[in-house]
Image (cartoon, rainbow over the protein chains, first blue to last red):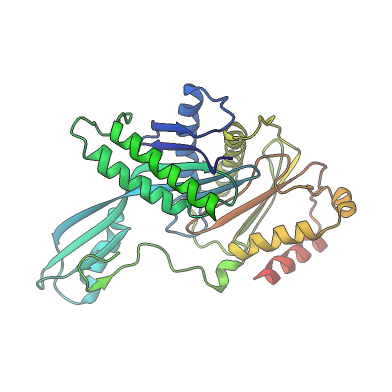
Length: 190
Length: 164
């Protein structure tokens, strides 16, 4: 019995850059996976649009009868130094940050001298990781975070890898297989 | 996440409080995508007008249904669209209680009410959650007729408000 059925990684434009099947029924061909990945990308965007409150970052977990789908978005940290208005807290860095839509996810800042504000924004770079697993499988968020670490270590640091292109990195494949295997063993032992 | 140590702006909206357990909106669609009923209790953010919102909501449901039917790792599901669909937007507890309520009905009542016997049946997917809201939905194989009925409206309102 497989805890994880499949893993997808999609780039910021919704293109599938990595797909691995771990024992689903296996009736999906390459075209199907590409289509599903781009469909998920648009569903994710629409769910943000339909949120009744602000600050929605899209679907994190989709529950179906026979599987759960966990989605994780990769973060990028952008640091910027900008000049801010020196007078008063209301015109300080926080106010500037809130006025710029780009900085809506601004995470931390410090006004170093009076007139300079350092903004450090954390924003999603659009790369999404999602796993299809058995309903109620625990700790999938941790596994996804671990897969993201492997992606940064073995894909992004690979000098031959071009951004947004399909992932073909041997080290990533090996470590990913180990991570999934380890996850499966801990799940069986529980 | 804090980088410089002094002031921190939380990127996520305020945590779901008591108000967040209540429903935000509710939609009932028929199979042609016509919204038969729309109620809202708490909706601070509006990005689209009413028609576009309903159209987009129905489109999202329709696409998610076909996505989950295709993605299902266990067996091949025939993608059907059953007549009436009920959608409820709500907080965490709200969705749980609705599912409990539905499960607590006896099978005779379920048949007479046209309530699904299994969670989310008729379709593979029954809920999703984001960081700000949770969406649950169910389908009724037989029809529910929604009319402009005063009693229905008041009872529904009372029930949903009582859930928080």
